[in-house]
Length: 118
Length: 92
Image (cartoon, rainbow over all chains, first blue to last red; front, top):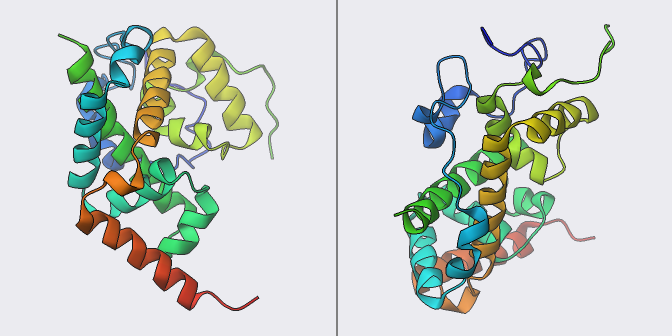
């Protein structure tokens, strides 16, 4: 297939533009398709992910995130608060909140991948 | 104003766009058109479907962290946020 996809181009409201996506940066071709498709580990790795030592590492990773990302991912994914509450608590927009959450999860996902794939 | 004239196709959005929309998708924050584009893409693209599974696992693993296990500085920061929020929010 040639060129970029038509679907969202006319729409112009991607919530996260390319410059915001540095966490996933080099994984795509210039046209935006996977350059290196994800290694499969989601199904196989679930059991290992819940091991106590893994939980401790993920906790440490959360603690080391940039401050704003850490606040958002802690409130959303550790505390389990809905998006609207987190926006109110932090005084940020929904869009901004999701960019921070996206980056934080991307970083944790990458860490889990390094643990899962050997 | 144009209307969509065809069912969304898996290639209407790129993998990069699909990944960029995943947080919104999981929050149910996409409009119906974008959601349909996303679902058409996920149905055909095993790479993006796997990425989404991995993000779901990421959320689940992070969700197993207990607040009391967080480093004291991180917990204090959280408590500060809650306190400030309770203090500043308008009385209902």
